[in-house]
Image 1: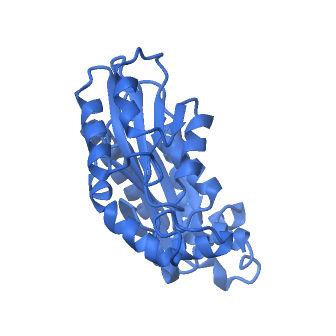
Image 2: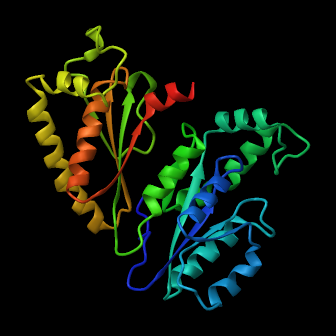
Image 3: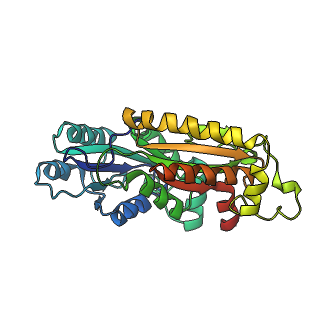
Length: 297
């Protein structure tokens, strides 16, 4: 999906409409925007939004939370507001959809024992299914979609920061992620590279419990005769693509590096690629999915 510019451009004011199913993390996203210096308004009635559009702007970017609990909420109403912002000469709008898989939403409602706003007298699953069906057009129109199924609140805040923290000029936020193929490729990855052909530190007893963030693991992986050519080609390809995606208007580009366990080879390559891109002046965030899972456990 191609988002609008997330940073102030030609004097325009970024306005992010934040929506998504209940329990997916929209409130956490709003708090993350507040930490970034955005003016945030959560669950503002749709009827009041035209006044907000017509009012004198104070120059700060805005993040507006909208969901089924919003007074007079409707999908058509949200899209009308979004389209009205797009017609405004001052506003630079984007629609952020904070998503989550249904089974994860059911688990979250079970843990908190909260009632679903669309089915207060029924099971949470019933409300979740109704809401997902109701919001599917908003999901399809979203400029930016974040799937919070595998994310902690901290991860979501970091993702928001990587996407929306710019303050001037069009920018491209890069996310470099490592993962294990055993758990599948992360959703939303733009480019995936398989690192399983490289020497595996797992078979060295002294390195087994370490990670790709340790220097001796990197030395082991980079000593593979195929490593240098692979890494040179990887960085060259990435350096070729990133300016093109930025010029095309993309706000976020994610690169996934996978290996068997997601602890050694993919982590080492991801760290080195992130360092190379940072040295080129790109805004880069790192995620090591399997390491985060182990820390969470």
